[in-house]
Figure 1: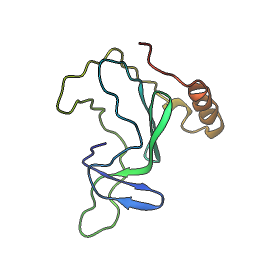
Figure 2 (figure 1 turned 180 degrees about the vertical axis):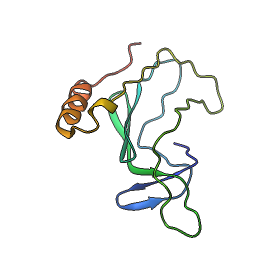
Figure 3 (figure 1 turned 135 degrees about the horizontal axis):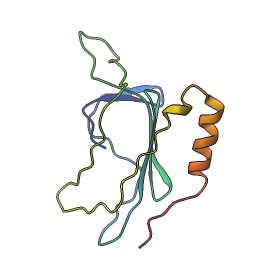
Figure 4 (figure 1 turned 30 degrees about the vertical axis):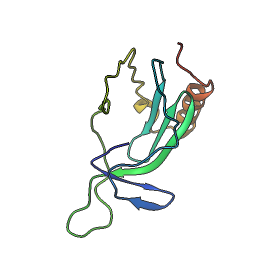
Length: 123
């Protein structure tokens, strides 16, 4: 993952802007399903073919004036890019969970339903 921000993982602030995931590398012509669960400014989880490959908390702008933490991200954009070779995108979907944000039990149930099936890209 490359980001122009910092985040917290395992209780530590991560300031490096290139961070490896625990995903394998997918070579050749094959579809790979990538998903990201983003819960406001608190939690981000990345999945590849239904397997969690990265988790972090408190995404934030780089700090200013010597502060340890920056301002938490409240909004932003989703960017999709390839590095060093062409990439095809077959389908992009966004599921807005905002309406469940103030009801933790309902949010948890919706996320459980979404994640109940390991989704792998059809070849």
